Image 1 (cartoon, rainbow, N blue to C red):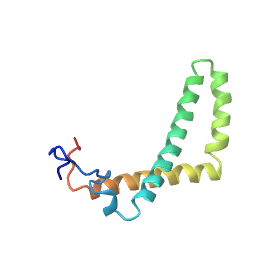
Image 2: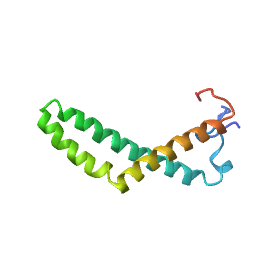
Image 3: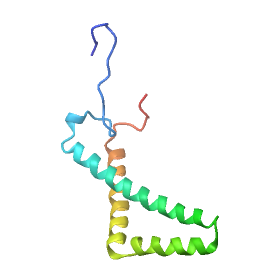
Image 4: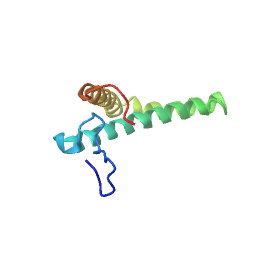
Length: 106
């Protein structure tokens, strides 16, 4: 499609190579993948923060580990983490599967 100046315009496409209107529920899927990714990111950030406490002292690292484990090793934390990992990975693989090709967009 050309714009007023005669240049070719590209349609915006989603992560799976299709237009947003062509994908039913695309906004919901994107939000779920975002929240799942954020939960995984928070886990990773707290994990690396615990490693950083090791630069201060082993005692600080052990104290940080206790707080880390209180949340992530509880039933709600474990279900939240593993559920987010499974959802994020599954939706990423579905997004790759739906692409018409594996070339990166320009």
